[in-house]
Length: 87
Image 1 (cartoon, rainbow, N blue to C red):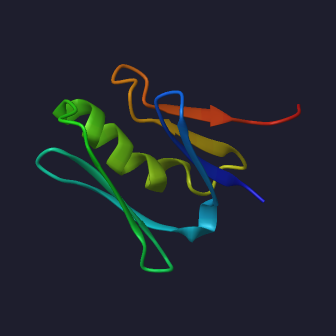
Image 2 (cartoon, rainbow, N blue to C red):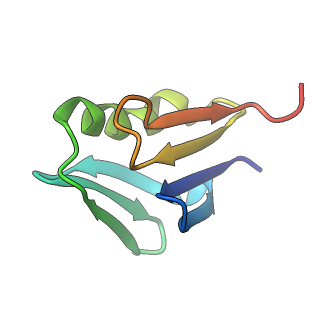
């Protein structure tokens, strides 16, 4: 089972099954992660447009990969990391 981890600073970390993420979309001031259960995680961090674009498109680009996705919403230069687990 591959997971999606959403981190925000040192104190917030949420982990979901990758199949639970329905979509990710940009807003004027951040991004929204929508889960299949109807829950939304809305980050209003005034992040740069390039960072928001990378986060939004990442789910489609990496969904079928056998890797875990880690979103660090405070790291604007590298907001997405793939974790391949044990090799």
